Amino acid sequence: MLAQCVLLVLAVTVSCDPLPLPYQGHVLIQLTPETAEHVQWLEKLEENSAELDFWSGTHIGVKMEVRVPPSSRQTFLDLLTERGIEHEIVVENLQELVNQETMSNWASNYASSAVGVYVRSPQIFSWMDQLAASSSLVSIISIGKSFEGRDLKVAKVSSGPGRPAIFINSGQHSREWIAHASMIWILNELVTKYGTEDRITSIVDMYDWYIMPLANPDGYDYSHDKDRFWRKTRSTTASSRCPGADPNRNWDAMFGGEGTSSNTCSDIYRGPYAFSEVETRSLAEFLTQLHNQQTIKMYIDVHAYSQLWFTPYGYSSNKYPSDYSELLRVANIGAAAVMKENNSRWKIGTPPQLLYAASGGAFDWAKMQLGVKYAYALEVRPASGGMWGFVVDAKQIPDSAKEVLAGLVAVAHEMK
Image (tube, rainbow, N blue to C red):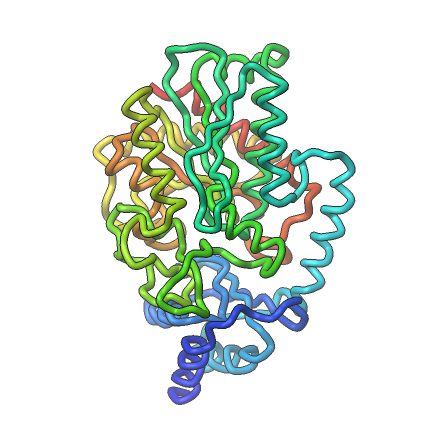
């Protein structure tokens, strides 16, 4: 058994080439670690793996999903069995789900808009520019360029001067399409429903809203064009065959700590140093300037999936801000509004409580280093991997966005 484990780790460490497409024969395995030893073993595999794609965190007693290519399927299944880790194959051929998502996107893409559909960055940015041209509420701010030269665009929605700011970004992890699409839908709602819908009008008159749908446009376009499950940036690394870093492990907030990897081929590779990625560095510089000029009342980093409302801190299981009770109070109100919208189930707490510790995260940085009062991270639908995970029917975009918007309305009225 030990020999098999060594072979598997060696294989996934050395094999750094992007997985072949399409995903014919790739399986999604759902498993449940029951002991600390199970967790440690799985975390080691994730840190050193270039073939095993961990879709969710490793936590005792919590179901998680791992995408496995045909070449590693039997070895991984045998190792799980030998270690006594409960598991089942929930998707026999992942390509079928990718095909379904593609078909759902075609069915939704009946208009020349980025709203309610999965489209590439040029279409998203063009739509943002058109939205600004059509409404005096909106202005578009370019905060820099990505590694591959794409714009890093932020939409500002404001009905007048003198308001504190709320900043929301999505798309740090490129494969989480439902998160990006939800924020695009919400941006459209804030602009088109202002003046006609009371709840929208009230929150736009209370705060200036800054929304950045694509914090990692290079990775996002790559996930459309080459690898649907690409997570990282596309920067050059020490390994020419393993580009990019995990942008949500790259912030200067306990950088290099728990829940990160120094392996360039890992999906949780933190980068060589804090803010090594131009995308995170540009965003941090903009957030710093905005907070100094206007005061950011709330920062939210939107991800998928698992239906979680994260409170800080993410880097340690026993570290909390001094005002944690207030952060938790507002988070509970926001999550309650989310759940009421479509009768969904969300959990509230820190990342280590609900999933796993993750150092170098954006919302930890916003709270620890920038001093934003209310800093959160959201994991939107679906609740678990099951038959979907990162692959979500485009028809679900409006419902996902409505849930998040309900939560945003609630917390906007509750913050002190």
